[in-house]
Length: 393
Image (cartoon, rainbow, N blue to C red; front, side, top):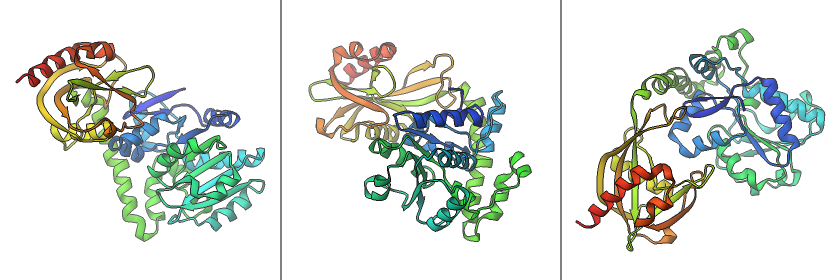
């Protein structure tokens, strides 16, 4: 797929016509697919939420909805087409009406457009469209909505707002084998019903639609809209500049957990991506964290518990550069702080993070190098030395 990576999120870099061709292909397939519509604010949310970051990058299609992404691509030497969620929604509704494809729509209970507003507009604009509409809260569980389950739609539009709509789709799509295409489309139906007026085409063309939106929001929502605009217009460009031009000169801070049990075995986890990739639990240090806070958070996120005690800490013990054409956060590599951790829980306490790991196992310390992925050999030999030093003190 023709994509560009912006702040770690892979975004579609083709035309709207090509995107619609892909969507028609999804609808002909057997597997359920999902589409996301990232904009600058969504990408900023993903930087703080690992599950959300994973969901966006796991999407079958990530449409660039936001002029900020187009500007970022220009800086990177690419000219991508901005494809708004509102436009894409209209195109898919037209396709569904022409081809007799069933559609279900989930809107938030507090959305500007009520179910009757949406029904009236759809009946007028797409008279041949077969559809059902459900209201939902942000945290929504599919089995409770019998009408949608009975209707068995081919397309599911989820308008719960980010990140709830994408998380719902990722978690619930496997339970809906009848759905061929699910999309998170935010406030697209508010544009369709006219509750929010779209900016004139010239305003959209110069990327000033955000300013138009301020004056379209009800007074009670303008402060909320200004906060979103601040993120998109100020925070996102600054983060992009740091990611693209500054971080390349630095190493990302990283913590590694050498977790061992009472018999001296070491815990390895297997990442979900591609081939078997066994390694020690590890992760980046987030802004505002110290190393100790980061290791507790990472072990809790990756293994579901904090039943361990720190036996040793080795600050920035290992540093390495990433291979060409790979980066995380725009950095040139990682510098790792090693924690020797004594596990005080039971095996039943270990519950892996489903979007990061697919398996775990205990291995004898002297078998660590053989069992871990070969890319770790140099670092893990050093880590083993520090482990042995620590437990023999």
